[in-house]
Length: 574
Image (cartoon, rainbow, N blue to C red; front, side, top):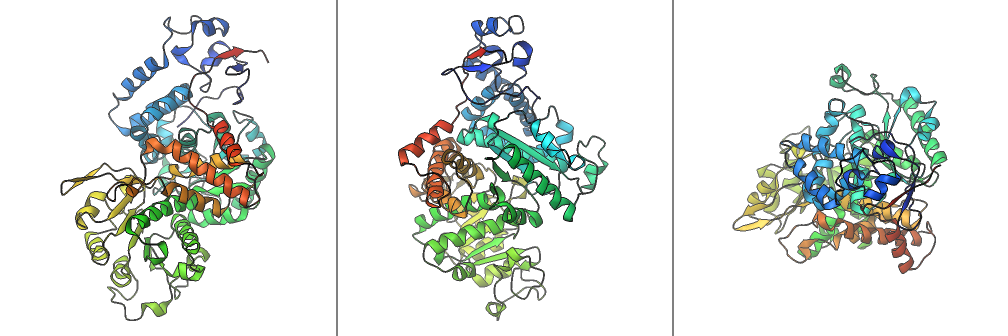
């Protein structure tokens, strides 16, 4: 998704409900956050130099929505719909957010997963107009100047990626910009963070994707990825420049490779207000689903055996949040970790392996537990081996291996538990470890299922199962809203635990044991408000935010929520 470069503007509303602007005529039509298109009323057309630049009839927003949705429905593929909505966002952000808000279940999979993955893959071929900042390595000595070119001087949230691990698609170089743009669109859509308070950033340190390097239309820096000390120095320069330019900013790391994701989070989490959504957001939204499932089954996390296929940053984030949940129930950290079985590309993560990174080693199972196991191979302990011998009650997929949860594995798991919890979370949809329909068929409809990408409802034995999406959009926008409203100085793990508990209360399965595990997207703003409140309370308890009453915090949250409605514009020469 991409946007035109416009003169700087403020996202603060002045003069009551009106906004003072320093733009007139075609410049105003080129400012997507201010542009109303055909909906400019007659008086504003006269005062703002728009007479003759628009058709005579002044449309209502309802007429605009009808016209725009009519055009949207003519598109025949998801990538066409993605490009169409991108163009709308570039032209008229208020109308864009109104349209998507009115059709959120239909359009969120277009502006974000799974379609954003295709948009990232084809970025250099569908590119129209730039959005955000592209900080390329050859400009490493000019980062401050680049940040001064940001379209708004009042940035509150930055989402940054280096494009190396985009969803389950790998290194997409400059195409990774679609992820920060999409994430920030969700900040606005789901939690009401004002669009002009957000800044997507692509750190272009090259790419090792041979296809991109050979592509004559590739828009990024045609160079192998910078690594090692040079990479770290570049990241350090970026963080210092951001904190100089926007000292109170919330910085979200997104889709960094596993060798950098946890490392960068650990390095900077105590230096500025920052978090990694792939690690902490994914962990929180997953734990929220597990907490809801436990209420349905009458169990506790500490009574479960959990197998996770995939041991990258997302899996570690999920594991860390599960451990926090188990500790809350009274288990020790060691006891909690012993209930989690991680499987990577080389098999089970266990103590005899010498190839484990520190994060994986925390979850390495003792080889003493493996004595007497029935195994298919001697050189590798597979997912089949683990399920056969551990008898897990919860199975989670973050592997980006389509079909990895086979019929044999699912049936074997289901034979040992009444209501197996199975969460194939890899996205986009093409990377899902199993389809919900297959899982329900293989478990006679007993499984509690949620997915990382959207799936249609499943009919099974005369019952229709709505498939809840384990969507980070239920967590990170609310976390951001809570951080900004409470003016928290840092983001802590406890804030994400609080967010998970908050989200778990919204599970439809609590009212219907065969309902969806996660709420419908139409409720996401209500969810975000509640998440924001619990995060703000957690920030105060940690001494990271100024003390305020519950009512004061709720008012602060409401003050931060922007609704996509046209405001009167008043011209004021600068």
